[in-house]
Amino acid sequence: MTGFGHVDATPSTRLGTHPLETMLRSLLNLTKRMLAGVLLLLAGTVALAQDVPAIAAASDLKFALDEIAGKFQQDSGRQVRISYGSSGNFTRQIAQDAPFELFLSADEAYVFQLAAQNLTPDRGVLYASGRIVLFAPQGSKLKPDAQFTDLRAAVADGRIARFAIANPEHAPYGRAAMQALQSTGLWAPLQAHLVLGENVSQAAQFAVSGSAQGGIFAYSLALAPAIAARGRYVLIPESLHQPLRQRMVLLRKAGDTARAFYAYLQQPTARAVFKRHGFVLPGEAAG
Image (cartoon, rainbow, N blue to C red; front, top):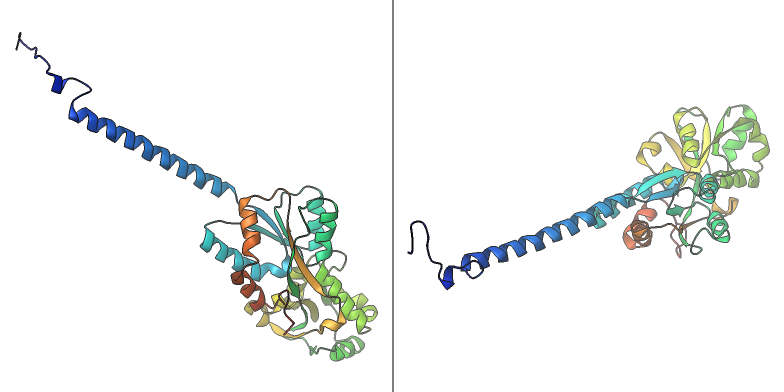
């Protein structure tokens, strides 16, 4: 000691060489690395949260696709935002630059149309084929049969005041319903009784609610317990209408989550859900 309050620093206690400072520097560097990792993780989480793509889907897919989207979120941690409607209306919206990243159409012709306009990177993939049913709600005097025998009689004897189908101008399932009625000679007799839904889900709603005495809509909707419990239905032979070949396609603005969902829809988990909801899978015969 050389004076009051002053201590000579030995080499082992000078700043920068003391073991305590070395430890503190190591801790500081470790903290910086950990903070950088947390920030990187948070940035990735925010980016993932922002990547919730808008998906356009034909309304016959409502129950199947909601289930698949839930499984996709469980398996990947990613979400999608699905809008349901008629394939024709979605095609027009996409051509007008609607912000969709993936389109699941009930008619592959709409996908081909978008591809021809260079709005998609390719012509997409076939994911399913659909079926239609003749449905009579509870309380209706119509007895559904595959050849429309009682429907013909009901039109003639006045039991049918209203009959629901989707609008055939832009809804593929409405077009299939029209073709089935034309094939059986009932299109003209039913003209005055038709109630047109904007899409096939709305047509099903009209039929199930009892506001119509019957209707034709998607088998995938008729299988839903909430609908099946409210009436009777029969599958319409595929020979009565053109095939409902359903195709999906990525749009040019598709991001990572949309691409991941597109791939997921082609995997066994999603295919099993489609099949359970009444769709015929590519390469398989109708049951």
